[in-house]
Image 1 (cartoon, rainbow, N blue to C red):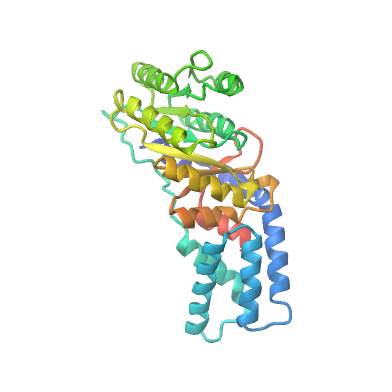
Image 2 (spheres, rainbow, N blue to C red; image 1 turned 180 degrees about the vertical axis):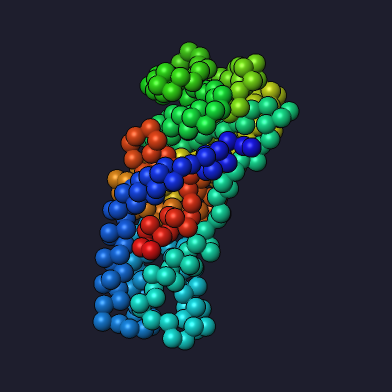
Length: 322
């Protein structure tokens, strides 16, 4: 059994309830904002007409769902109204939940790797400085270790001493080994050493931190490609996962960062941090749909266990009410 399945299945009822409560708290600001806007959008209306749809479009755009995704949602609701002729504003939340869930990319609840013979599962983490990238890595390491995995971290963001130190602190906090070199070292060299160490230790999961610079997209692309190519010399399938970390509180700026990083490398999973501190949680919907990449993790608080596997049904229900 893979470790993502351990993540999702080895839960007591109490833990599952606690996670749901954490998600509800994390989305409080977004939910309050969205529901207030929807209430105003349908005020005095009993049917979903063009005016309601225009108002709803404004609600979704101003909730950072994004223009492209918003237009698709509105189109889906229009088709639904034509099909279900007696659909009224009282059913709007239900329709929104159903249509958004249908269009969101499904996040795998189990990892694809097999424990026997394939070596460690390698995650390369990318994202700009300040989005909570290193903290996300630390919380992931904690989650994996809690479920019995042997984890090794690689400090390949060698351009900032603070990044290496922060990752080492997370290593101490979670009792997980961190492979690091001197500041300014070749990031690919760090990644190579990390995988060699992980293989020698018979580790289950390797998480590689990378530099968060966007000022030169070509340089970023070359650097990430070099890291990937070097890792393949040790684990041919590596990296199994390229996880882009985005700060949900930055709204549309997070979408722009997603454009940059998906152009630079083959991102196949997303982590959204700081959902608890923003009313811009709708960005999770827009990013996942626009880039056709699943949101895999969401950060709903500052505690070490406030990183959750993303479940689109729970997310949408928490956002638009049950």
